[in-house]
Image (cartoon, rainbow, N blue to C red; front, top):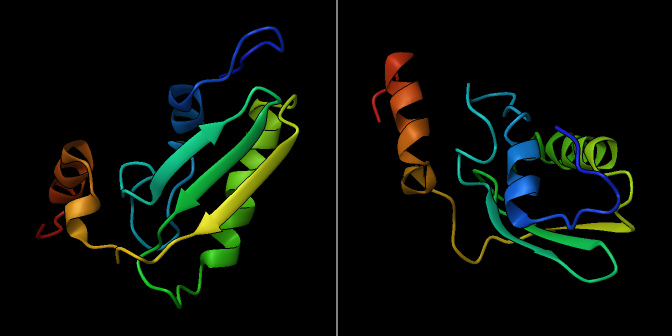
Length: 112
């Protein structure tokens, strides 16, 4: 996936790129897991993303955040600033998983 520097980056573009990042412990991408809570891009190509992880003490927090930044810098090199904010005001639970994600997990034998 690639967006040229003349095209406006959309939330859809960001989410599509982030679907390529898999959670290291759950066999699903971070978008379908419902980790991405909010995406905003301003007119200067500054990106803010609010994420929730499975727990506040998630041992993979640093890995996931670095993976997000690395992926977005690669796909959207013209982004000026990428800000990732963790938000646990609404704790993650399995209801955050997309219908597609739940179906994928069921096919893998998960009871969800």
